Image (cartoon, rainbow, N blue to C red; front, side, top):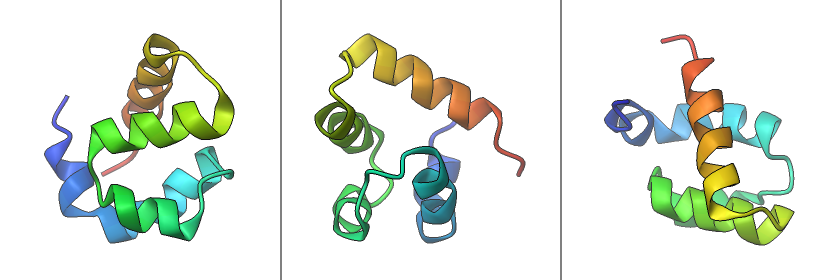
Length: 67
């Protein structure tokens, strides 16, 4: 997976991220700034999920994105 696409287009991707994980705030998204590890951490924090579950969720979400 090439996460660089997400990082490079983060401002455009924030809407799609919020659709998937609505508990993330605009401040969260600004802080994450495309960093996958920070995204995982915020999702874990907001949703109370385990790291491996969160990682799978992000992989699934990424694979559904149309570029």
